[in-house]
Image 1: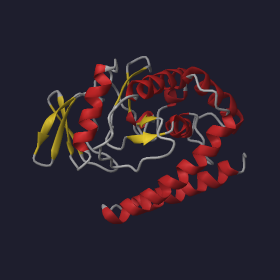
Image 2 (image 1 turned 30 degrees about the vertical axis):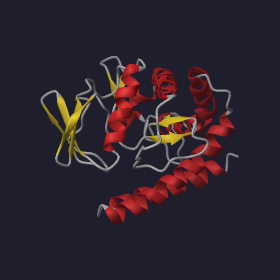
Image 3 (image 1 turned 90 degrees about the vertical axis):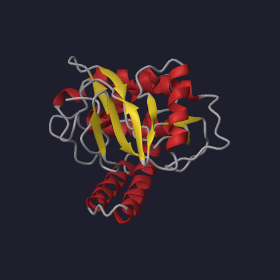
Image 4 (image 1 turned 120 degrees about the horizontal axis):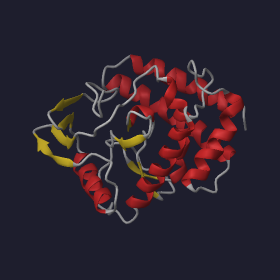
Length: 241
């Protein structure tokens, strides 16, 4: 497998040689400027913007294997939490100072706007090598300013995982607290595991609302079923607080 999928949940994606083609939007110039800013600040594992043709953006191809659902068992290795937390910290730190005066974002900005969040930093948007270590990230089109914990909580939701119905082979709720604390330690955050769960609940409800909106806008009824699952998990996690 490779860093670019043949299709996406929200956006059609295709690979052409060493490039990836995606549908562009009003936010694309901002995202391309942001990706170039990341590269200047030491992030060498994100896509490089190449340009746009009509309504298509062109990005460099990110080498690696991107897991699809159902996620393989090796995704639950603690090394994924360690690698992901460290890369997320690098990503956030590298975004500091990015000019947002004339920025256009697909995803709404959040407060406090500490950094530029990826907003979909999860195994399904990460590239892995043959040893199961993360080598890159893709799908930055949903990025926007927000608090660091907004990305941390979503990564925890997907990678710990934090769900009422853990996938086969995934760690269960008895392991969640320790895995969240590992993620926070490797990121270098002073937030508590309860802070992460609290934001994860808000994050899931936000994602449910977004999915319902996109189901109608993009004529993708399966997003409504995903919204139901997000609401279920939010209610489940709220019981932990």
